[in-house]
Image (cartoon, rainbow, N blue to C red; front, top):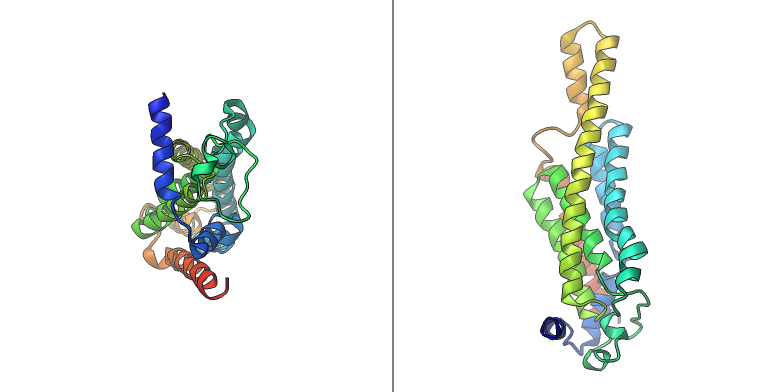
Length: 246
């Protein structure tokens, strides 16, 4: 166990090895959830554009929020207080080895990383939902950037990140499974309603296809391109701010 603990620290120090104020500024900005608000808005916009029904849009958003609750919320409320693992920057045996950026402090426990769990659960859920390679790569990269910032800042051990990613993946898959079950149930209810309201079968089929919005082909690159573009713009803006407006 001590060997694993030492390895955890050694790997952490590989990520926490910068004395650059510019890098500190970049990382402390990227690790904030507020920095990524435009991405969340763009995701909602994408769902609204793709899905015609308010019920469909609401269902997606509800299960995306469920991802966050099951991955990070349960961790913060139950797992972290039960394990009580100190964060590296709060552990007197490790803190002196770390480079700690100005203004960085965390009071909660370390195991496991809610940043990793939250972001990766969303990345998995959205990837399964849209089935678009470009968006999948973009969302996974976004999650990994968030994980990197936690290691850089010394607020998590690598094992915290690995477990967080694993838990987030599991919750993302679970939420997508539950979403599909719920969507199919709502879809069957819609079919019954349309059959009761129409006598023309062709009309029924066309309305179902039109209202269903999300289909077996997933989302096209044209429909999702706003997400990777905004991710790139945010990273560029953060770097420019750190370099030219410290």
